Structures are given as structure tokens and as C-alpha cells.
Length: 511
Image (cartoon, helix red, strand yellow):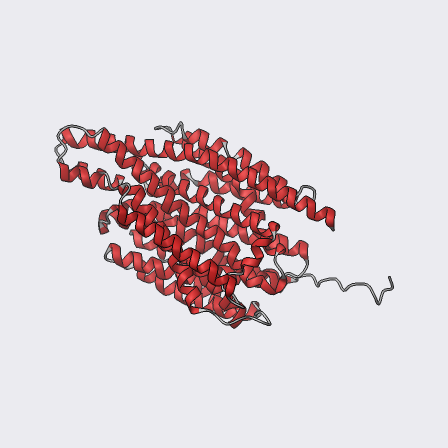
């Protein structure tokens, strides 16, 4: 082949592109930190706003579900209107919603503010990932850039409890939301100068019906699951769940008929795309469902202050960062699927340790570290696999689906696993309720551990102390049950990733 016929190599990124990546890392950190930073604030905001059990779960998971339900829509809008434009609009909205959340005076107001935050976050994540693909044309640089960006997600999720602990030590619970305001201001000032606009050349019309269906599907399904898990089987709850499944079916059938679908189902026919997406959903379920319980356990069962609880979770963040850097360096010699499978297998040590959690915080922290470190290869490498498997013209949609998988998994972990844990906690407490507890107090105590501890303080010491001890035992039991459920899910993740390994091996042989 002559020099004239040689294929043109993609240009390598320079200082401006890497500076743009640093700016795009801001929303990556904040989107995940906003999910995890709330965990440590739950006891203090519960004391002030007095949410019920269902409201407390909605405070924690409405953000994730609105994100998951809106991501595909925002990815499609970015393809059509420009990803930088959607990114900057989302930044303004996120900052405003954060102020509203910090100033909330009721549980309902906080839930509404968190929902708006979720919609704004859906503008940030897929646009950031699509812009990274446009900025980094060289495949090796793009893989490194996406890994660094994903480390921002992991760092935000892991450092959220620590940052929240520091803020809660000096300020009121609403301060955890105000972190977003200066960060979004930085993005708005620097973004227009560092980040070029990027949009698809042939983006289709946005289907309003699909937008509504994509948001209603996860919210309706999860509401039904939450009600069934907390209150047991009832026809209204089962009906809501069935309605959600019907809405989801209608959404899928509509996407197959549309010339320009909101969700490109054809991408799921590519195994190298579909398998990592499914795995990322499962990883989100495992990590966020566990983090929700361990953060509360450190404060409400072991009695640590928010700052001390955040410091106890620092080893998890540090270990995850180190593992992400190591696996990123190994991808040139070892296939990502191999690293991801090995990590999922090693992560089983985490829930095994969590089944032994007691009044020793070292056991709890070691279990969290093992689980997080084992799943880090999936978080660090999975997104790059998804984006690389999709055609370039579908960058926005692929990015949105990738982030939808991660966010939907996180929201499911909080909602479903959290609801199961709440159901287990309530059942254990009622079965072991100390004598003398009034029925109305028992009903409130079975909703959440904070409600039980608050109720115990209002009772005579002879009744309140045993109630508090039993409630803590019930929460510990729910953590143990959660860990037992996690073990087979990790085994399923390892088997799923083995499928990815075979798929990528076959692809390489075909090439």
C-alpha cells in the first residue's frame, strides 16, 4: 500500500482536550456524589422533616429513577440540539434544584427538589460521555479518557459519605446539596471555551409519547415493588406493578415501530453492547443497595457521628481508585472481560464478610472494600466497551443507554434492595418486639430505624432501651439478609461477564 493509500490515523488529543475532560469530570463527580452524599444526612433530615417509611425511600431513590427515566431522552436531545448545549442547560437546572433541596421544609418539598435534580443530572451524564467521544478520536486515548471520567463517577459515589460527613459536622443537613452550586458555576464559565459543540448529523424527531412512557415505566414498576416489599402482597400494589410492566411493554413495542426511536433497540442486538449494559445495571444494584445500608449502619447501629462514619468509608474510596488505575493499565495485556470476570468473582468476599457484621466496624468496612474493589473493573471498563461497540453516529444514544444502565441499577439497588431490607427489618422488629410497646409506637418503629430510635427516646427507659436495642438488631439482621441475596447476584454477574469474554474473543477471531 502506498503512502497516498494509507488510512489517515485519528488525530491525538492535546492539552485543550484533556482540560475539557477535567471540566467534564465535574458533573461526573456530582451526579454520583448527589446519590451517596444523602446517606449520611438521612438521620438528621429524618429528625427535622419526619418523613414516613415510604417518603424516606422516595427521598433516597426518586433522584436515581428520574435520572434513569430521562437519560435516553436527554441523549436523543443532545444528538439533535447539541450535547454542549444540553450540558450547560442541565448545569443551570442542577444548581437551582440543589438550592431548592437545601432549603426544603418538608419531605414532599425535598422529594420534588430531588426529582428536579434527577432530571438535570440526566442532561449532564450522556452529554459528557458523547462529548468525550467527540474530543478523543484516538481509541487508546479515548479508553483512558473514559476510564478517568468513570473514576470521577466512582470517586463521587465513594467520597460522597466523607464529604457529607465533614459538612454535617459543621453545618445543617441541607449543606450537602449546596456543593453543586460552585461546581456548576465552574462548568458554566469554562465549558463554552474548552468544549466544542457536538451533535449527530441525522438526528431524528423526538417522540413525546416515548418520553412519557420511558419515565413512567421505571417509576411505576418500582413503586409497585416498594409497596409489595414494605407492606406485603396486596392487590393495589400488585396492580401498580402489573401496570408498570404493561407500560414498559408498550414502550418497547413503540420503539420497534418508530423510524427514529427514542431507545435504539437495534443496539441490543450487538452482544458486545448488550452484555456490558446488563452488567452495569447489576453492578449498580449491588453497590448502591449495599452503600445505603452500610452508611446507615455506621451511624444508627454503631453510633458514629456523620464525620466519623464518612472517615470509616474512606478506605473504600481509596481502594476503588487504586484498582481503577491498575486495571486501566492492564487492559493492553489482559482483555477487559477477563479483568471484569475476575473482579466479580473476588467481590464475593464482600457480602460474605457483611454476613458477619456486628459491633466491630472493621468487619463492615472490609466487606465494603472487598465488594467495591471487585466491582471497580466493571465500572472502569464497562462504559468504554459499550461506547466502542456502538456506531459513531449513535454516540449520544449509546452514551445515554450506558448511563441509564448504571443509574437505573443504582436506583433499583436503593429502591428494591432498600425495600427488601426495610421489609426484613420491620418483620424482625414486630416478631421480637419488647413487651409494653404501644401499638401506635410499634407501627411507627417498623417503618424505619430512625423512627424506632426516635420513638424509643419518648418512651420510659424500661421500654425505650429494649426497643432501641431490638431495632438495631433488626437492622443488623436486614443487612445480613441483604448480603446473602448479594452473593448469588455476584455469581450471576461473573457468569454474564464470561459471556462477554466469549463474545469478544469470537469478534477478535472474526476480525
